[in-house]
Amino acid sequence: MKPAAAAVMSLAQLLEQQPAAPPPCLVEPGLLPPQGILFVGGEPKVGKSLLVANLALSLAAGTGRIGFPVPTARRVLVCQFELPIPQFVSRLATMRRVLGASADQHLLVDTRTAGHLLSAPQGLGHFVAAAKSAAAEVIVLDPLYSTHDQDENDTRAMAALCQSLLRLRDASRAALVVVHHVRKSIGRHEIGSAFRGSSALHAVGDSYLLVTRPSPQLATVELRFQFRYAAPQPPRLLELNPETLWFSSTGAAPSPAAPRRKVEKTDLAQAMANIGDWARYSELRGEIMNLTECSKRTAQLAITEACRQGWIVQADGQYRLPL
Image (cartoon, rainbow, N blue to C red):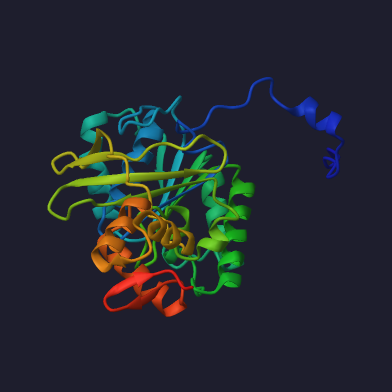
């Protein structure tokens, strides 16, 4: 009987096992590290599942079809819960016409996902067994909320679910692509923090891909990225071809405007100093806008708040600093 490997090893022993060169990412640049966890999120019907199916086929075929380099073909196990199997296969068949048979032997589908929960030991066992049966190098879970029965607003429950994701990754030695939904109201600059249960997800995710739709009238989506171990990538735009169900790159997305900073007390003092002892409302508002590059509405709110706090004083329709 082969002795069990030691659980505690010295740095020297670990370095002996280290490959001469780090293994390449499964999807470049840094989108899916080896045995990494990629979260893909967005609002309902934005195209997350289509995009992930494109990504799964690209990985299985070893082609960077949607603009992300894929160094080599990988065995991909898809565990999807939203479509009946015949309908899902029909979707894949439409996408397959672009690739031919290059992905046929490497893309595998778990046809018995229904009723299995990652949050339960028996369900976790099902996914581990399926991954080992497929010899999967990548596992797709679409969507995450169908794999558990926990409260996504409960940080402790989400942390327990994330531990199940880690156990699945470690037992299968595969990378995970997890489709998840986002909070109802998110800021323009949010990415990883936009996901439901984000505080727990940040502990396990290696990369985050947020899918948004700049215009409801267009079949174009914007991708925004957040990586733990790779350099940040600029947002990019993809356009969906409804005939092939493939996304294709349309170039880099316009750079988002820098977030406006809050108008501070020192800004008010500087604005008054620039104008003089007294300032009319329109003068003060304009000077604040020039100093801080804020909107008219923000400058108006700043003046109201400054009067309330006593930072400036109003008298006879004009404003001054307190004596």
